[in-house]
Length: 289
Ligand SMILES: C[S@@+](CC[C@H](N)C(=O)[O-])C[C@H]1O[C@@H](n2cnc3c(N)ncnc32)[C@H](O)[C@@H]1O
Image (cartoon, rainbow, N blue to C red; front, side):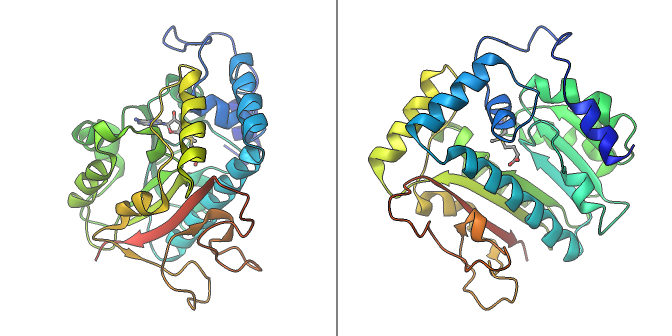
């Protein structure tokens, strides 16, 4: 299937969804799809997007910058030799998806997409049926055993070889009670040395801004966690080794604002240069040794 076919199949028809797709409550996958200019969303999702953007101008740009970071991140780890990807909270198919990015470097790359929103499977299964070494499943990332033991995961991923775990714009969806950072450790405990993490997380260094943003998402009835501080979000890198956020390796290996991560012509910045920007996406890539 060509990239054009992929896009054509992934957009348009909103009828015939399974009953578990709730069309009356906005979901993160569909709000994010709307922010990326996709068509796999409903009026409630577009209203939520407008409300978020009005209260927090720049959020749509932030979503787009995050997606561009995902592309650079997958490209980077593929070029470092990783051929297997477990893309958790993958979201709806969009213009350039993990398997398409990875296969520019490794035409035989394997990708398992996992998302807990049933709309992702409704769109993804039909599309990926014709794409070898790729699968999509509905599952909750906190069910580590369930995700790893699933038939498609076992068929496509060789756990004796490095795996790229993708948690891109995802852990802020997970409340503290579900121990998001412990869940990540549980995945890495099962992975071979050389495995890596492609990561971003919505953060703020201003408690009021973080609380307001979090409360707004919860006010839609949408399942979500919270905006965390950059220090909290960086807990994910415990026991992993960050790579430099600059392509030439000269910048210290720290998490940075996602649009400045290995983006040629941009100097990596730990937070947005504009002090008035209080919410951003904190990003980094790290390896298990
Ligand atoms: C903001 S989107 C990010 C999509 C994609 N990773 C990206 O960065 O372009 C977050 C995705 O995580 C999914 N998600 C949220 N909580 C999840 C959970 N507990 N398990 C699996 N997926 C989850 C949402 O349905 C949504 O599709």
